[in-house]
Structure formats: structure tokens, C-alpha cells
Image 1 (cartoon, helix red, strand yellow):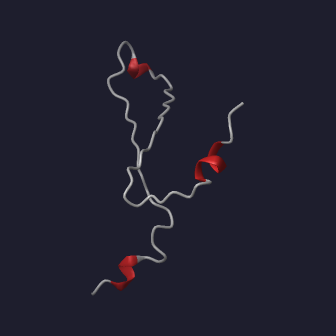
Image 2 (image 1 turned 180 degrees about the horizontal axis):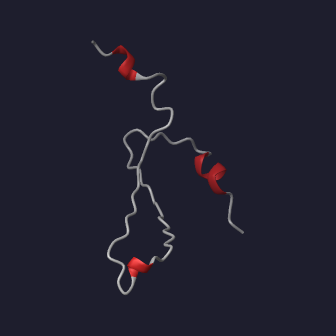
Length: 66
């Protein structure tokens, strides 16, 4: 099972410009209990950062005026 996956999805080569991009993100948290967590765990932080990779061909800050 599982279908053809990503190769089939990108086979028609549709452009992204002018379309709506959707990102489904699943965050899993593993918590190691501590004595301070008993009887109630007060807080637990989780975060997500979206960082482009290869968006620019070089660092755009190099051409900023000084």
C-alpha cells in the first residue's frame, strides 16, 4: 500500500506561485518526569521554527550599505 507518494504528486509540475501553501506539522514531546512536576506539571514548552533553506543564492546582508 501507500500509493505512489511524492513522485506522483509532483509529476504534473504545477506552479506554486499564486496558490495556497498548506503545511501540516506534527509536534511530538517527550517529557522526562522530575520531582518538581509532582503533583502537577506547571509548564512545558514546545516551539516550531520555519527556516528557509537555499532561499537566497548568497547572504543578502553582504550588500547592505555600511
